[in-house]
Image (cartoon, rainbow over all chains, first blue to last red; front, side, top):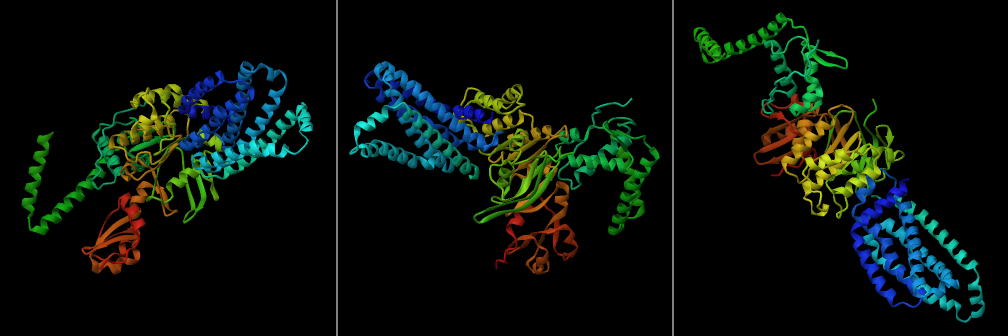
Length: 212
Length: 135
Length: 287
């Protein structure tokens, strides 16, 4: 399949960044030793590992777009490959953080908190990559770096501040009750999937139109 | 029956002013006239010759077409170009035409600067002698 | 036989430049040179053939496959190299080999390794430490190691020494020797083309000036030189010219040579002359 080849190409093209990944894993390891809450573990893995990794293929593409475009594949393969790689990255990040969570805070996995937190962060990542991807595809990584940083800040801020704001003043106990429902994580995951699919369609259209 | 891959010696001058295809055709014709290439000998393929001489394929194609038009070579579909049965009289006649042209020029030039017939004939004798020494 | 390359009515508009209605064909077994001054549209044409840019109008067919609808099949058949190295800086020749093997159905790894050896390319070094000549040879090795019908080269020899350029000409002639595949080769170095090209396509300022066999090209144009006094009688038939105090020098169609006054010198045009004078046009006399 064309998209699979593109994923492999992305991974190969990011060869120079693999050093960074080893470094990050090392730093991660250091933090893990000091960790007590699984939530921290989750977000740490996401921010330190996943978010930079998500951007590397775009950075690599900037420098060797001629290669991608001269090989026998379509632009749609490149876009699909990149999104699939992101999804794989999310899955990997969660497995890793679940493992770390188990090590630091075994309780959280059992009492279902972990599942809820995981789906909230999935939504967070889904929004982030869905917003960043079309911009990266349209303008290239170098020109979009500032935007990437800003979008991360805004979305993190929204979730960090706006969400609690929305909750304050309301009946907290009922919200907490609702949050315990096993349906919430599923709904959040579905919303994430929809957002990503919409973003994929936009990226496809934008990348096809782009010259080179 | 037909010999393959004969080595044909051709030297091209880029600055002589004579079109390259003409040079190729002339040199092959000369080889045939001298008997270096005999009836039934295979010429190098158009593409191989182009590659060896570092010229374009169209150039060698044109040279071979010229030779074919003059009846010196025949194209066999799928096999290549081969030297035709040589009509030695025809070749001689062709060369005789050229010699006549050269001599006519010499006569004209001689008249222009006032060299007389006897001087011209003497010059011709010397040149013929010189040529036979070289052989 | 299907054309290896068939370009029909190709048009692309940019801000301030238009590639206008370019049409030409390349049959199997020939080398075609694509020439023209900088910015005339050569690279644009090649990028449109590779579908790296979107065309506004026209059709491009590579061995029967449409460049857009049959993009993947077409690219299988094209060996592409340009003056920019397209491989990742951090890669080594082995990474290139693995990528090519992943993508091309008929990639010959042994053939690739053989070219790496023939070209003397270092296997242990990263591509970013290659010289320009080495990078070009690497791209050529890649282009020549899978089963292609068209070698598409976008000024691969700019900035390279004559030794490499001669090696390239040998490679190109070897490539077409069986008569079933072709080369389209865009370059400034017209002396290379004057030797081995079968056809020349000349694009100037986005327009196709001609696409025909090289011998005819060199017969179609002549260079004329004359004194300032003869200029007026020649002006009408000049395609382009240069003038100075000694006189003028310009390009005309050979068929117009009969109209020349006796004191004007007429001689064969080289490809460079043809390109330069088309670019210059008629300059007002500098007095």
